[in-house]
Length: 155
Image 1: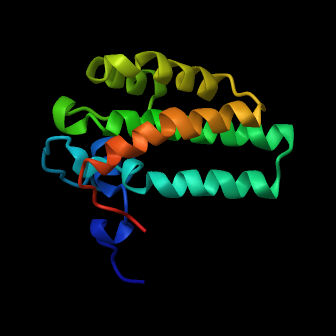
Image 2 (image 1 turned 90 degrees about the vertical axis):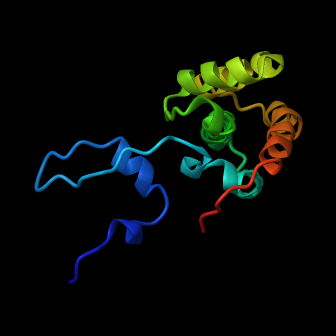
Image 3 (image 1 turned 90 degrees about the horizontal axis):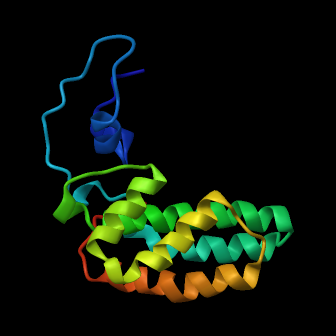
């Protein structure tokens, strides 16, 4: 088997390199790079996440499945909120509360709605109608904001 280049790894390799520590073998020298929207991995494919949510729910709308998909969708929305700010803030985190905090700083008018998303990511519900209302309300607003930016998409 031949050597694999970092670019062969695919999406997210930049984040992986920036947020990793070598614990075995030789360390890879990573040039310092400013965090920008180039690091976004959720926002470019946000519409697909909505479509997948709808498909998952059609297949299995049991209370436990709905709770699991609630967590999955809300975490994605939080991370997308942060990714909308990457060019301005120059920071990245997968942690949910920093995503909420940074988003709220740049979109104070949407702070309360994002807080509901944070609560649902941590304390999921199985109320499908409620989740759909958030997806179709605040989620659609996030989609509109994403559409205002140019993203590199990953397949």
